[in-house]
Amino acid sequence: MICYKLCIFISLVVVGYSNPMGPRDGPRTNKEDETMAEVTGPLNEEKFCDFPDVAEYRVYNTKWNKLDLTYRIVNYTSKWSNANVDSGIAKAVQWWSDVTPLKFTRIFSGTADIMIGFVKGDHGDGNRFKENTLTLAHASKPNHIPYSFLHFNEERVSDFSEDWETFVTVAAHEFGHNLGLAHSHDNNAVMFDAIGESKACLNSDDIRGIQSLYGANPDKTLLPKC
Ligand code: ZN
Image 1 (cartoon, helix red, strand yellow):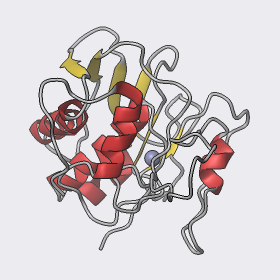
Image 2: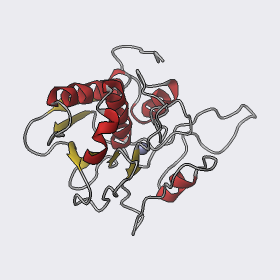
Image 3: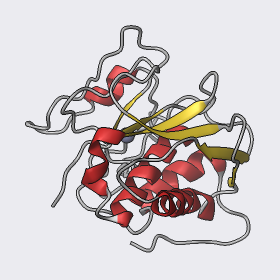
């Protein structure tokens, strides 16, 4: 089993932000989500009965106010083929568009809604990838100024370049942040904050989460396949 930290999350709110996620030694807590300050639960806290709240997903307090989004792959890694990156990103995007009305268009120049790249160390967004960090990637929220972004840690590419599905899983996780999802407490969700194993698709918790923000895909009803 592999277990890598998927990301840290860029917060505009927490001034002097530092990575709140230390090594996973003890039991998992909600601490990191609470540190982000903007996470809200999926359901109103007010309870109408004692039926257990089974939702594990979490959402941020911002989402896109449009359904047609663009993305751009700004650069590639030196450690893997461009074709694998292109197809992995396309697949990750499709996981989310399959179950929502969201549509993604890749553009090749100019500023996209979501700018994707491979970076290392201090790369100008105020959240450098530390040396020897386990963090594979990080992403911004929707509507980040001047644009939302998804950054893969170039120094960790070898951790997932052996396995295309792992890359897709990491990319889909980060896109989840770009779309407004925080970390889920469901350890089978793509939006869980560490990879236990690569996924073949979103799980039901991920789907409930994204559909709470954007609704279901009106063209088809897709059920979780894994
Ligand atoms: Zn994450």
